[in-house]
Image 1: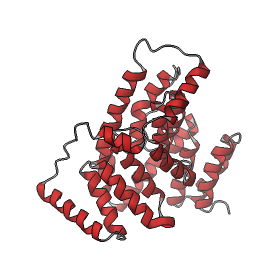
Image 2: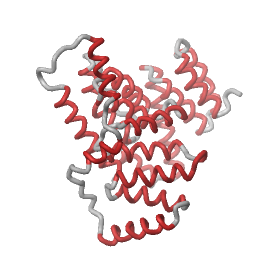
Image 3: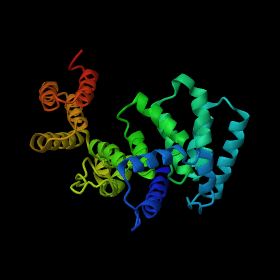
Length: 313
């Protein structure tokens, strides 16, 4: 439910953004003036609380919750208030508040959970908090949400959710060029069934247009679709392995013929390792080093994968 509502909220936010910044008659500005204006817009954007107060005025989505479910969540609220140090309780509360589209309450519960976990807080915990914070402000990325995203990227510089939301922030503050660069990493590196990849795919062409990039074409969707994933769940182990090997073969063929991002090469190396084809993984690793010899960032991505699967020490 959270994922669906985030799609709707951010989608509506992007439409509103277009009509405020992309309407006919929007004047041309000198570059320095436009950059200064965008910086001022980012610096003066509403806080998380202000965004939540504005979002509260919008119609609340109907999540189809039953009376029994609502009563259960009420009981959960009472329980966690009586047990302020119960991590499992606060985690459940955050999840169920989000299911009821109570995103501000969900974000507060998730934030409290993170405080309780302290040094044990995971990157996933922070991404969940960012999801809830952005949903709570009807798609706006507040300064407080940005701080969470920056921490995610400090821990994981390639985190697609954080890159998507950071791109959304720049799209909302008149820097479509930066949004495009960030979203391009997301759409070209991630599996297309991932929610943040879908969101980026739905907005990147508009960002490219606003940034003056005329020749950008959205890449073909990659990875298994929902129907294929459902079929895989019902397969025998032998059939599932055969399907995976077929996908790996297709990826290898495409990378050899068309090239691809370092993340895709890393994915191929990792997949070959999982299938036990270490010699082939080693060969692809050597080839990838040649392909990305001029990019230290891409080589770092590849090296991290090679280290994880033991190709290098």
